[in-house]
Length: 373
Image (cartoon, rainbow, N blue to C red; front, top):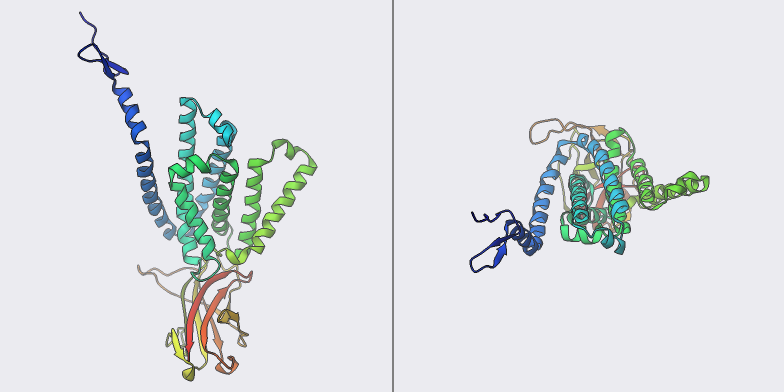
């Protein structure tokens, strides 16, 4: 009895004595021919999944506590990848066999999913806090670019995870952005600037853990250097505070008008007013502080970008507002200030803004109006 061809083998006999590729070989060839398309399909899937994850940010700050666990997982994966597979050109030598390639791809796949979960969860927080025409919009752009790159398999596998320094910077941006949100979720009533500085110090420590030899931790001099570097991270975060959104605080409503009702709302909201009709102007802003009332908020009035002296003290009062579903919005503060017309400059024409600032000098939100000639 003739031997039966093995359908699962790599080669099968065909008429005329030749051979055609078996099922496994055909599958391998198909993946080889279409791997580029599969990468892009997976990238589109990752973008869709990221958009889905972003919806959880609307559920509240409580979910941000899980970011700490994701950060630890991402840190472990990055350290393992470069310990096992090397960096740069050395990585090609250590990722040569099929088993090594499968292990490398599996680890980077897990890492990408960790990044995508964290970054897309963060984006709504930073989107609500960043001011479109303010300096904080640049950090939002950086975070958005990082989230996008985490879904691009071709870029992430071939560039980000090939070089330890690029991977460290990528992780550093993610770590800083995550801690800036997670710290207020873990410690209530903490000023936004304190969260920012803690995130800066922790980011430098994580960066050192990926590059500093373990032997350096055994010497007092090495430990001193790391402590100094952590201090540099804290100081750097302080110096860069005006560029960093003070998440999770954000302005829900910000308006300016000539009259205030007894309940603290504006009787009339204006975007433009003629200089001949200019009178005392009031700014009323409703600010949501999910992490508690750790910051002393204040109004800063500006005309054409230049700060104007404010003669009146501003007041903070709790306010009750409801979301579209009829639930009370928690941790809401109403900030009100008045700018008397008599204190305005002789030529008040120009673009005016009222910035909501934290005590640490971070921009939370902005109301705008124009005085016309």
